[in-house]
Amino acid sequence: MRGSGRTYWRLLVAGFRRGSTYRLAALGGLVANATFGLLKVAVLLATVEAAGGELAGYDAARMSAYIWLSQGLLGSVNLFGRTDVAERIKTGDIAVDFLRPLDVQAATITTAVGQALFALLPRGVPSVVLGALVVGMATPDHPASYALGALSVLLGIVLSWATVYVVATAGFWLVDARGLQVLYMVVSGFLAGLFVPIWLFPSWLVALAQATPFPSMLMYPVDVLSGRVEGLGALAMVAAQVGWLALVLLAGHLLTRAGRVRLEVQGG
Image (tube, rainbow, N blue to C red; front, side):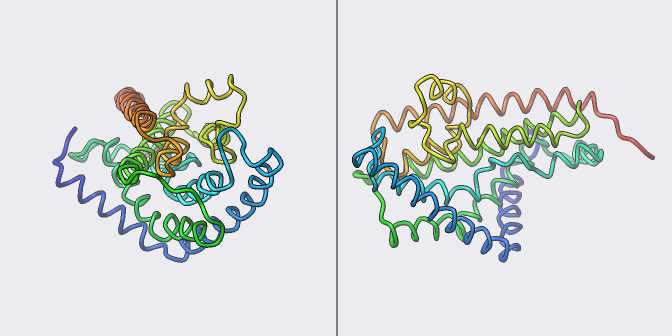
């Protein structure tokens, strides 16, 4: 990896500051999070009640925790497939990035993660507080779950942006990767557990979801942070996140190298 650790730290801080400039957008995101969170509360808690008070291990408190934690992470975990590097590949501006003394993949992901971490403040934390005060939710039994949950959230955020980077590298061959980004948005949200917990899926669909990195972006962090899964189960989820992150980063590195050779810049 080119560049020093201090340089990437500055990129992380720059991304954080960049996120802080869009305060009205953050407020709009919070309103959207709260609105859709309340809608999900109405639907999913009614489903739990209709099932007799518990559904696939979720009672009302655990389902509420799932709803508000997932809504709170929505502004930081990239399940939409959009990233600036995709446009830079399309326009050819990525050629300038290759001339800089930085690893393009690492610099892109680091900056994006900084921006995503800021989103936790105006969107993530208030969403969770709203859920806790208005609806109520389950909390972990052990204090260690909070620390492990924070690590899991960080891994989920980094993994989501690293995966979106991989999607963007398809632009080296497709020129315009918007169709692939839309497909990513549809598949990732469903398999990550954005709409309902994946544990409510049929067993074959749960297995299919776990064969992808998507649950590691959202479902696993929510399970660990909410305390639904603790102990060895929580450690196994974090280990799965680390494994997927290593694979995705390797894929991004290889595709960047191949794309650099393939890149054609039009114009003069």
